[in-house]
Amino acid sequence: MNDITPAELKQRQAAGEKPIILDVRETWENEEARIEGSQNIPLGTLPDKISDLEELKDQEIIVHCKGGGRSASAKALLIQHGFSNVRNLLGGFGAYQQL
Image (cartoon, rainbow, N blue to C red):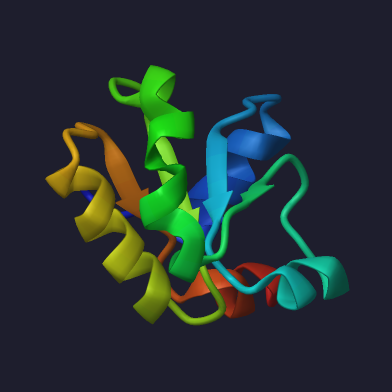
């Protein structure tokens, strides 16, 4: 599945959609500012939390971090564990905030 642009995500949210958004930034980053409805699991703890996400394996999951690097790693990890529909937020939270 292709990654998602901040504009596409904002359009979907404006239309009332509530996609599953996984914020892999550190907890302190999430506490400063966050995308409404996102779930925070820092990248370093993600391997230990994958089993908690098991019921989401076949659903679309949008992962994001500050700029896109950590979320790319998270996307690869989730796909490796059998998640079939993982999309990285291009440009990360920084790009999302600028819209």
